[in-house]
Length: 253
Image (tube, rainbow, N blue to C red; front, side, top):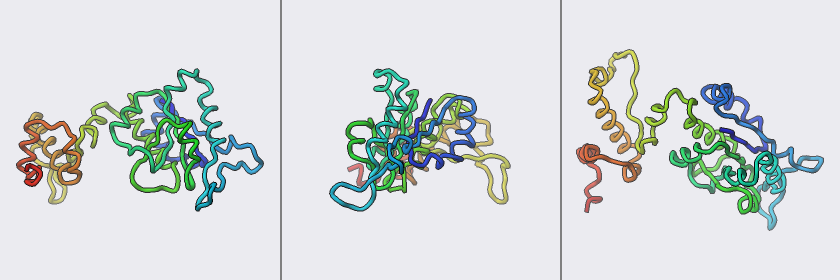
């Protein structure tokens, strides 16, 4: 997959995109992160990419011309039909909240164009006539869209075949099943006065799977009970949750 990132600060991506799993994925040609400096598409001596708001107000606004031209330049190698199939995403606190389902949906494509907002925001004409989707990584505001773009790239890349060690690793992660992940343990089996649960050392894989499922349900109930109403729960899941007092009595009435 190709990630085309349009930003005022391409140097912000130096480091985070070059190490660990994402770095290895790029070295192996599984993903590419192509950075475009929006200021390269300005046409004045000062490379002006932002300006004051019409009507007054605090904060500068990113100008539409360099953003439109940067996107058009990135997509110029594609036919009109191909361009229509490539999502053009604005990272913005006003966007749809990023979740695992959206990440998986985006990973099915071959390219993404990601625009990093900055300052007070972008000219509304970018929203109305250029982008195809706005995405937020949470209900808070950052100093710019660069960190949010890195989060999106990281999350989507994990669904690209070969980026993560095995497909099972991705499918067992928190949120992939609709629940939070079960507890994880490794050697040594006994550390100080803390021991790994005996069931995990028993070799009974069916019972281990059941224990992990129950622990995943317990963790979700304790930390994100809102997820349970959307999860695909079996009769065994429901019986276990009921033994923990879920749903609350008032919810059953």
